[in-house]
Amino acid sequence: MDLSRIRIVLVQTTHPGNIGAAARAMKNMGLTQLVLVNPRDFPSGVALGRAASALDILDNAQVVDSLDTAIADCGLVIGTSARSRSIPWPMVDPEGCAEKLVVASNQNDVALVFGREDRGLSNDELQLCHFHVQIPANEEYPSLNIAAAVMLLCYEIRKAVLRAPGEDKAENTDSLKQAAGKTQGIDDPIYEIWDQPLATVADLEGYLKHLEKVLVRLEFHDPENPRQLMSRLRRLYSRIRPDTMEINILRGVLASTEYQLDKKNRSES
Ligand code: SAH
Image (cartoon, rainbow, N blue to C red; front, top):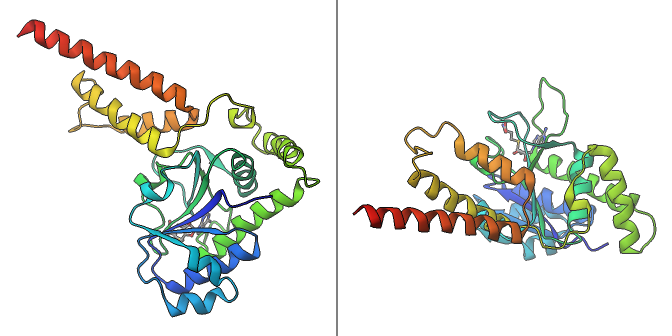
């Protein structure tokens, strides 16, 4: 199975040794695409030393300056977190995470995002993700070294690939669909044949910015007193996972709303 549509994203890694160890873990598990968001120290001899025979992964790693850029073209993004955050988000376990990524990667580029060694991912970064995955580690000390977390979740991806019988891609996808459905116990439209491509992160971000602008104009939303409104709407839309056609319809509704507001303003002035 081609795993080149699954990318591993490391956000602001401090220690280059962790980048090298993550690259080695990826190569051991058959993954190839590494994206680094603002690494503190890269390229680095220390990273090369820890990567051992995974130098190709470091050579091909893309370095970008924001998480938005790293995942803009992805149809599914899963963020990792060692602890629960203020606003609950759809969660998957490590097996479910792997199954979702492998199945979705048949049709979309997908990403698994890891945070900083000291602080993990910020709430804003986690809210760019469709799901969060938490490795159920010892509650007294749940925070793994980042490269260990990369290894564990890439191993789950490998197991999900190996669980699929035969070489035939369609057959693989079917058995993973069943496995994913069982694990998650949910009816996830991404496991169905869908007539439109899923909206990417960039599509959804564009829509949410537009929505916020219109809600402010309607005086429904007060940016001085936001009360988590936009976070909750973001969670709603990322849970639904709209496709590109649906996003176009929603943007059309916003454009009409703006047109009517302009017309009303003109007639009043
Ligand atoms: N103190 C930080 C922990 C950062 S550990 C915090 O509380 O968020 C560095 C990174 O390793 C995390 O951002 C995450 O990507 C990964 N990681 C570590 N432990 C994890 C766990 N139990 N589940 C999922 N990811 C984990």
